[in-house]
Image (cartoon, rainbow, N blue to C red; front, side):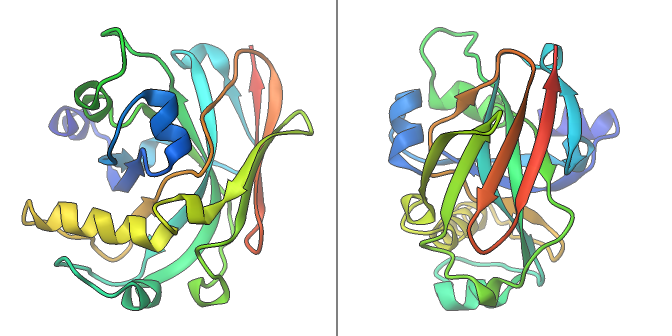
Length: 217
């Protein structure tokens, strides 16, 4: 699937890690994380206007957007070293095609669909990783000014850095690593929120910033 997307001109930007919190695993009926490539051609700026018609049952979640500042290879890297390797942290809204074409959701379909990834709205400015705990930040998502979901980043495998460590281990088992400049979204602590009509969505991460997107029919 990735080769087909590259062949049509899409540029890999990094990876997403999915099913990293109990809330998401319960929602999808799965028991372990997955990872999938993400592509810069599906990135949108803060304040973007999107059409719900472009998605197969659109759903969203708040994300930490981590930009890797140095090449990373190999498993069993201390979490403290991973923090040093993150160039900056931004707020994002991950967009999904929230539909299964094969009945009940399976890990196989989730992987083949790129973790249902349909895009990423990314904040313009980031903050240094060393200014954040990256384990207890409150992550929330609001729709039309009303909070829909909120939880601590600790729900993401004990903290987003643990998710990055898991990703590195998974990549290492295939002889790969993370290149400097790669973007990693480590997962969300809350369930996916369906978007079935016009509205404004905002993600807020304490200590980082906010990012928003508007949906039209």
